[in-house]
Image (tube, rainbow, N blue to C red; front, side, top):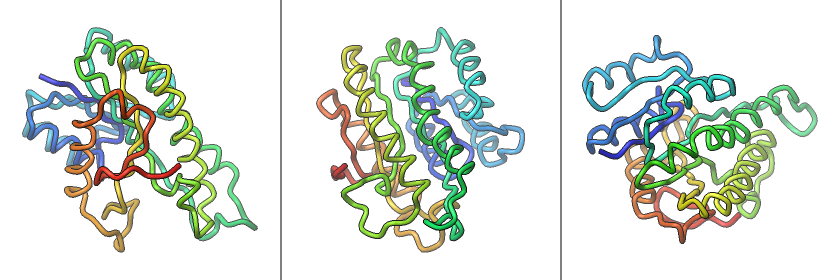
Length: 232
């Protein structure tokens, strides 16, 4: 049975990743900050009792990351999906009025935490069969694609994640681990908003296909949910 660890598994993309992988018969390590209030995730875990285990994890707390990794030391992981993220930009976070504390927090959660997760769980990935690291990014982190400006905080935090993953892909390839960044599309979630173009089901189905097909030849690449490569 293949095993996937998913951060931010309590809602949106993370919850749908959990549902689809469970329906496919995978073992899921579903992580979120407040499992006790994650009603939909707990209902899913109850439905798939033998497949889903729920773990408390705030990815902004690096001690918690180390503790979880230690508690799962003997657990091989086939796919690590760093999905948890924040979008702190608002109409007030503009050129003339940036929230610098929010910016630092975005870098901690969106850019540094996936790196810390990778450090902590590389040994688990090496024990796995598939050996894939997936960092969830956004097309908004593409410098080439930025034609509208704005969203300084979110854009820069995801651009940083892209560079982190590119460097990781080179080092981890020596261990047989494929590292890549994926864009889920503009999805109908709390973060994506009501004007988004695709459903979470469409996004995650596509992303799972991209993950399934990925090989070491794809390490360090930037793909959308539909398999299209995105320019940096």
